[in-house]
Image (cartoon, helix red, strand yellow):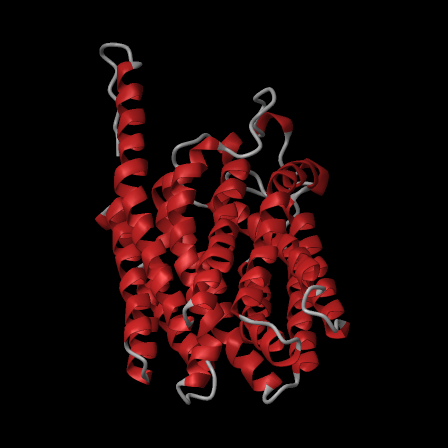
Length: 402
């Protein structure tokens, strides 16, 4: 599962420099077109999430992972023949559906292996594949496209997506909710392990508040990834590949060496550290127009992003039963796309009206807004739910609230 995810996020990483440069240098696009490209990718993924959750429950997560990778590969290969920037938008949307399918399938199965008190740790180890791919991909992408070999860049990206689909075929067919032995694909998640609520909501409510916090942090990162390729060229650095390499190395070190930290220091503290660092890192990139500002900001953003996803995922998943886990993870990970839509449309529009440095500053504001939602909305809601649970416990029965 981690191998398939690594290959797929190398695909995603290759596209980080390819798509913005293709839009600006060959198709006559602007910052708003880059933002719309991100938004299209994300909106299609958001719209597909409820159907993907049901598909994974009925047909198995392995099938969903393989299909998603191959769908993304096909859309990327088709991008090599477009002549108009508007045609890019539906193809980016299909890529988004493919990304959502593979990521939801892999994240759900990885989560099934972990006991409740180690879910943030498991997410940290798993996300090494995500951030390793995002770090390696831009180096490959910038190297391949050089001064304008965009078709080659798209074909290389598509090949990595195909590789992800091939590797995903080796994922066991239908792991149990506890990570036990494999079953047949048709029995991947049997009826007694699925959410049997009559007419369940399309999006699981337990994931909405933690998802909103993550979405605001992801909006900041969307600004970082969308505008960094052109920003580094304007500074005379030749490209963004080594900035993303530094970002990735810092993420990998923290995710491996510090995987147990979120649960040790407390999930709320870990999320606070994450959002403060993302905001400060983006402000540094915006304020200091030099290699020091770019690389220093990348390190701070990497520290923040290393803690953000594992901690918030654990907060979301630990609040529900195993039967509802697929839908919770599907809803929660949807906020990757929500954040990209906000980053692409709102922050992209602000960058178009001001500058790329203004876009970085707007991303810092988004991450700071996530901190406000954490402390003023999410944590009070969790405390209220914990208090209500205690009120419902009969006298003489003890309950541990973490």
